[in-house]
Length: 88
Image 1: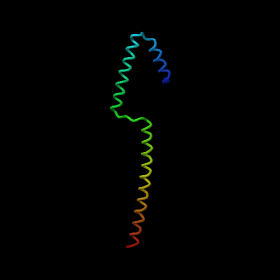
Image 2 (image 1 turned 60 degrees about the vertical axis):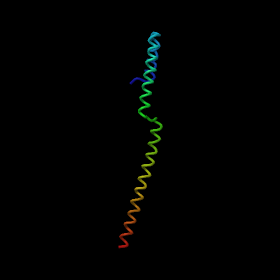
Image 3 (image 1 turned 180 degrees about the vertical axis):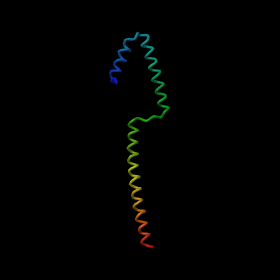
Image 4 (image 1 turned 45 degrees about the horizontal axis):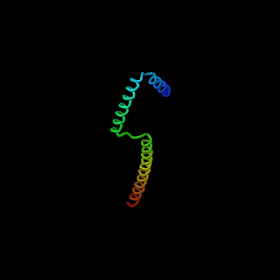
């Protein structure tokens, strides 16, 4: 697979070799495409990678706390069952 920097360099050199009229058209198309993509991405309500990673960490901590609470509840229920057996 080609290195992204190599692709960028090829695209830049190709763009620079275009006649002025075509270059202006290219720039206009690029602005329109960029604007359309930005509008589409805004409607999709996407999150950044940093936000995703932060929420993943919060979820992992919450999951660990829930598992610890479930284990504690099982232990408490077990000791309560043991006390009820002794009373009978």
